Length: 234
Ligand code: FES
Image (cartoon, rainbow, N blue to C red; front, top):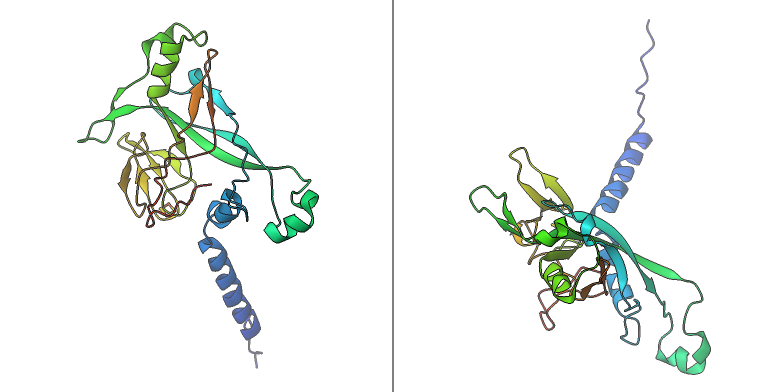
């Protein structure tokens, strides 16, 4: 008589897989780190920002492609404060960590563009023509014109902060897509569809130097007092 073949998966294995699936599922649905850390990093227990408010170099304007965005990484130094007012009053020299931290952010740079509403494709790019002649030595008025025509966007989705990607579909239409819940934005960061309640976050403090280098300070176009618009950007 043939011996009954043993089931290769025992009941214990099966339950184990179930538990593993639950854990993996939970991890995948945890909001991105930007969301989790946001309240910690944005303000400390004294209500101050821990993030360095100085200028950070992003890229040179000549590095911005003509008709698609490019992402650049910047690192904001953070001065971590880890004690509340009571502890600080007691130990005034111990309130700050000796460790050095940085906050990495990705910035999307692109030229402001007119979009053809029928095709969704870029119809006109506002890239100043003097960039064909030179990549540095910009006058003040040229720097103003450059600044006016560049989108400086955070890559944290305005819904729950997932990093957005630039994708071009088979019809040649490019857009920012958020992989978490399908949020969509055009090249200017304008909201197109999905759950995000607003356009992509813009850096509000931007400067361009004579040599064409673009700098930002930490800070976004978040309107104060908008209770329903909880920012998920760090
Ligand atoms: S985080 Fe939900 S759509 Fe981007």
